[in-house]
Every structure is written in structure tokens, then in C-alpha cells.
Image 1: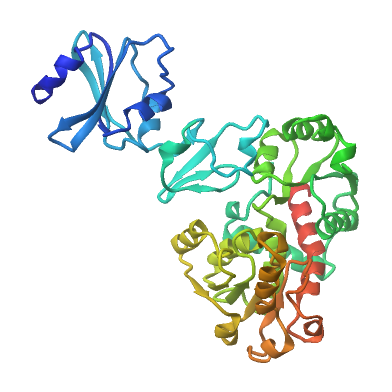
Image 2: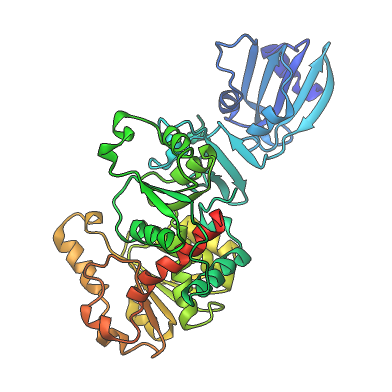
Length: 154
Length: 298
């Protein structure tokens, strides 16, 4: 972590919790939205955006104190931050480190852009998308979301 | 429990199974008491003549009974009941549900709340699998579906029948030519998906350029409301009109299909030509829907 010392001035190390590193630059706030962390939840959250990174040029970092994110939670960010790494911190030490994997399905993350879709009504239909090589396919109406996925996040 | 929601859910063996069953039914090889004692719930949230009546006819020919919801204005839907609740309640009254609804994905949602099989009879601009099966059945009556060269003509952007037909044809190595007015072309997502399924779509600006190469010409209605004014509609509509003179340029075996209702896109003089198969196509709806009802309830 020595190459990241300058950020230590901005964000202090956390004792325990989760650090999401190597987020695609500019996507940190969307990552938090997908994780359901709004600022009104209890966690202490630090966000750094457009941080210099030897690996990918620029990146975003999110640190969440006292909460260990489960794998199925973090995999939901894979579509907008495919290179992200998840570090679980315990007593200032990285206890676990893992990448994100694109899930086969996404539920409750993206709103279907098709205004005629049944999932955009008062019906008890939760947004559900199948992840395909060409994009996200709505489970209900087959609409294909190919770009600007972040714009359709619920 | 077997639902029939989208042609995407069916592989080639399943589609062939329905077509074989429909052929047996058309040859009168079926049990007219197969569905005796069964009740079919017909829930149409949008107007329909042939789809509703052919499902009713199919149920009656198999010895069963149909219950129709009636118009939306006269039902609990007018009081604001959700589709999910309607489906849960009606599931207790019937042995299968046929649903038509203005929202895309409605049938998929219904299948998640139903305790009986659901058959999609059209959901908005989405899927209409029984139409696709009867389209394929009509093609197969005239020629093998494998490698068939199909021209899709008309509103290919909003026309749900062409999307699901194209998806199904991709299972048979068909070649697809698309002819659509500007702005009403096949959606790029569909073209890409067809390419992934190994079917290239060639787009033509005029039907005259491709008609000589086709085995099947599938004509769809161009809806007047898609155009800003009557003049631009008539301009397009006249250039997509199928006439005996146009058909004279086609191969003699080429068949003309249309999901109906037609308006101006096919000249009535075409009806008398041996190429015109659209009324037969509509009649096949009963055999194909009998096969579907037998599959989910038999």
C-alpha cells in the first residue's frame, strides 16, 4: 500500500470494515448507490475519486468502516467497476482480498428503461436482469441495456 | 408446471414438438375429450378477435370450457386491482390462463404469481408465441423451414410478431431480409441477438430488390399513428403495398403471410393467388393453440 501513501492524508486507514479499491474513476458514488449506502445509513464512509493509480491511471476508492460486504453484495458493482478489488480489513490488516465477478443475474439494481415494461408499474415486480455478453436483458420484457448502465441504477 | 411465455424459452425440439402436434390435430388425430372437465381462463386486457376466438375454439374442440374475464371496464381491474392479484385469484377458478396485456413482460409476471399454467397471448410490443408457432406451422405446410429465405416487410420496429418469428427462424438456419420504412427498422438489439444466434439480417430499402430471392414474404401492418401526418403515412404505405404485379416478380412457390388484420398493405387482388396463405395461416391458429392447450393441461 506504499504507493497510496498520499491518500493516507485524505482518508485514514480503517480498523475494520471494507475497502473497495481500483473502482473505475468516477464511479465511486454509483458504487455506493448500488450497495445501498446513502449516507443516512450507520456506516462511516470515505470516498476518494480520481486518485492517481499506477495500475489504471486514475481510480476511485471507497472505505466503509465496521461493515464487511458479502460477496453477492460486491458482485453487483462488477458491471460498472469490473476491476474493483475488495479488501476486508480486520485490526488494520487486510484479512481477505478478492476481485468482483459479474453475476448471472441482477435483482433490484437497475430500472428497466422500457416505459412499457411491467416492472415499471405498481405491480409487485422487482427489477430483474439477466447478464449477457451484449448487456443486461430485462427478465420481464427482454429489453437489452447495452450502455450507460449507471444511468439506470435504481 | 409448464408456462408458454416467450419464443426465447423454446428450443428447436420444443417448437418442432408443437408443430408436429398441430399437424396431428389438423389430420384429426386427437382426442376430442382430452380436456373434458378442464376450464381455461381467458384474460384479455386488450381487444382481440382472432386470438381470443381461436383459443376458445381450440378449448371447445378438446372438450373443455372457457371462462372469459370480459372487458377491463367491467372487472376488478377498473377498481385498481394489480395483475398479480387478479392472477392469484383467477388461478383458483381455472386450470390454465391465457393472457393478453398491454404491458411488456406481463405474462412473465403472471407466471410468477399463477398456480396454474400461463400462456402468453401477446404482451404489449413484446412476445406472442402462439402467433410465431402458427407462422412457422404455415411455412412448414409449404416447405421445410430449414434454410428458408424470409423477407420481413413493414413496421419491424414495433411489430412484435416479426421479432419473435425472426428469433424462432434463427433456430432453423433461415436467411432474413428486412425491408422497413425509415425509422421503423428492426431494433439493433434484435439484429445483434440474431447475429449471435448465427442469423445475419440483410436490410433492403425496397421490396423489389429482394423479392425474387424469397421463399416467404411476411407482411406486417404499418400503423398510421407512427407517422406525423396522413401524407407521410400514405407515401410510405403505398410503397409497401403488395400487388399481383409485384408477386409476378417472385418465385412461383413464394408464399405471402400476414398476421392480420391487414389494412392497405396487401391488395385484395392478391387473395386469389396461390401465393396468398394468410387466411390459411389464421385458420392454423386453432390447431396450433389446441397443441399448446394440450401441452399445458393434457
